[in-house]
Image 1 (cartoon, rainbow, N blue to C red):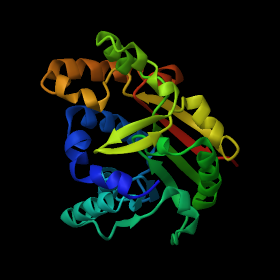
Image 2: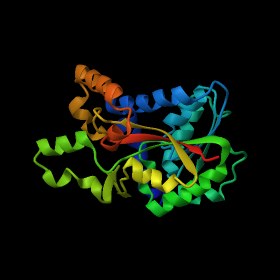
Image 3: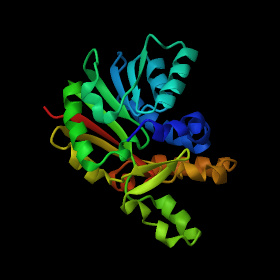
Length: 264
């Protein structure tokens, strides 16, 4: 994987996802969970695949120290601009870093939390995730947690959409590796259901929680259809908050959040 693959997506990423109504709803669901587990004291946080820095800004505004990393130079450039705009350079360190070379980084301290949002880890093979698990154990404190948002190998709302369009071959498209268009770059993407994802980390971590992110909130590429249907959005969001908090819902959502702790 190279930086250039994601560079082309950097300029429009916030417009095509972060600032869309669907993007806001999905991120709010992740943030609501993080709010429930983050203590009031300041944490030392490592963010993988930070993208344009939206989550790093949120963590820092809550008083935490963040080391935000991404393989894409242009994503990092956008993140740095945000850090300057919000005057958070004392709380956020931004670094271009390939996740597969995380062992070569010169971090100053161990981390209380490692976080990766919205499918960045789906660009890694199973073997790469196993290696990442071993490396994260050495980067976290003894009470540290790893929270990731990944994409499962089946999405109910996506499949219903394809069914309505008579695109039957796409209903189960996530069952195998896909080359996904990300800002006019084509990225190999691997989909893992929660149990399979957990299998890559089970030697070093215990599971705290798994929940769906995008069970009834649709995938972001359907934003144009739902953007002006505010009542529908509210209904879907409420349904998600009610139904999306278990392993089954996580397995059929657009994304799922998995919260892991270091084994004692």
